[in-house]
Image (cartoon, rainbow, N blue to C red; front, side, top):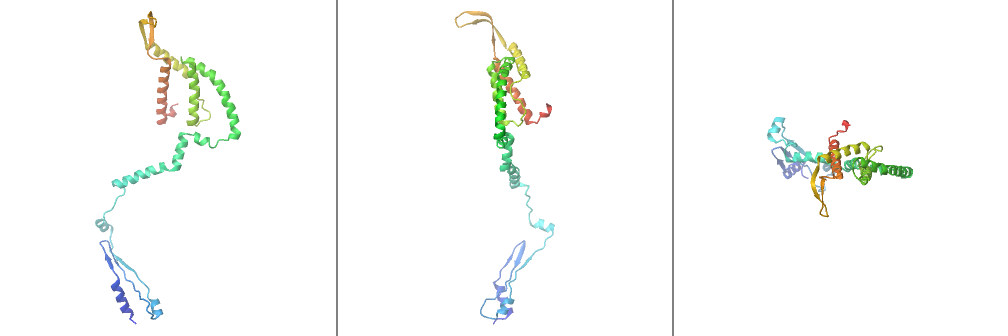
Length: 244
């Protein structure tokens, strides 16, 4: 039976030593094959693994190895962009954004049809009956055809039901807005009137002192509504609601 010292020497020849600039590993295994010898002697031999590496202080380590800065370079920039975009692309964030842009997706899901639908239906019919003659009268204050008053009462309320969040806002035509629009149209008619001395009619005759307007009343009212809508959109983007 080989001695313990001979076994260790034989096993050390089979081990490999890996050395590098950073560390060196010295591994040695003391293993004896099962050749039918004393089992107590075999159980007393356990494999061993020893490591040895150089010791560095901070200055030596920084001098030997390059420190990678995660904030610099294209990789760091990409990680910062992904970290900023990832929270906004999560399903919960997209759901909250959708509810803020279209509140109907939130309240319609929680709407109690059994207890609230009949009352809301009766209220809607009552307001519609009252709104039809009122909107036609307000359109005359704005110097436009009565049919445009009906348009101004129906479509704003329809759009607001999808994008609005207040239960108490009255959407539609108003007397003050109609009067202000009518005054602007009157001033623009006076400034944009082009007098024509002799206007030729379809039958070949002429009429003196005719006046031709450059824009119609509905065109001027539409332009006013568009400009006011742009102002309100800008006020909403810059959070200027405190002005009112």
